[in-house]
Image 1 (spheres, rainbow, N blue to C red):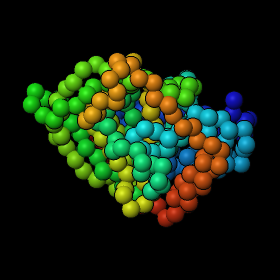
Image 2: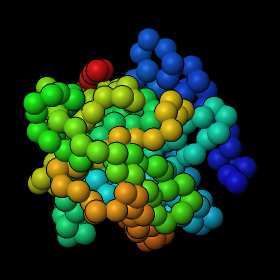
Image 3: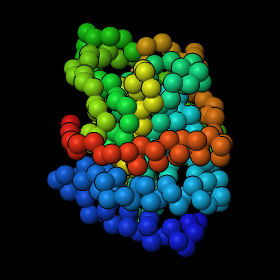
Image 4: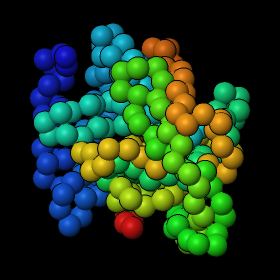
Length: 250
């Protein structure tokens, strides 16, 4: 449960989400959260509250796609999550294989706070690169997620670009994509996840995870020291001179 001094701030973020996420310009939601200081204010208050740090650390983890996933807000009404994605040039993250092609269960919009993202989009074809298809289900509060094998498909890359710091973008849930952070330094995004549209995420791998039809894959949750280090980095970025605004949508 949020401390009293943070409830009003989350209510303001709730209103921004409700007003803009389902509008013609959903990126306005993440833009306002970042540019009007709501994200900065929220992180500053979390950073000074031990209980909030513990709660957020428990629901944050090193994502198998190679970044730290930090869930700042997990709201039920309205249904959304405000997250930070942090790619670091750490040995632990480097040890993870390149990100799998995947889609999502929900639409989202995001703002690149620092670094850049290499972005690729894919479609299913009859004659493209073969991949092993899995259905991913969220770990929720557990320390493992499931990957269910559902056969093979072929894919073709149809779009690629680099998303620079200062750019806001949105993506619909069914778009197959792959994203990696900048190779030469940290990359950070603020990420606003909408309500679930489907029950699972499609994950496409170049090699099978295992011969088993269903796999449970363990997660490493972030510790409070892990979390505070990353939040301090984000605070530094948010207090730096603002970059020019840009938006994109696909």
